[in-house]
Amino acid sequence: MDKILEKANELKSALNDTKEYKEYLRLKELFDNSEEIKSLRIQLVKTKDDPHQHKKIEEEYNSHPLVVNYLAAQKELESILRVVKDIIEK
Image 1 (cartoon, rainbow, N blue to C red):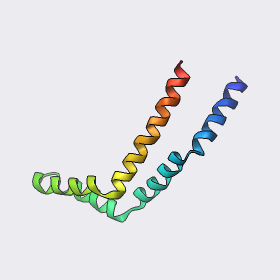
Image 2: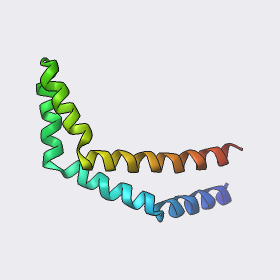
Image 3: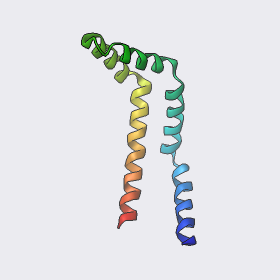
């Protein structure tokens, strides 16, 4: 069992060192702390009863470069984790 934990820790360390993981963390930090993103999310909630305005804000949110880049980094990291999962399951 110790050997499995050791290998799991090695895998975790290797994943933490990937450029994809580092970029994801960088973008997540920017995303989580962006006042502009927070404002857009609040506006989305406030406009839920006005479909036209809500759609406009939603489009602005979804096309925001930080949102686009963060979601792309998230997908990239998920892809790497799926590969790891597939290897482990074999």
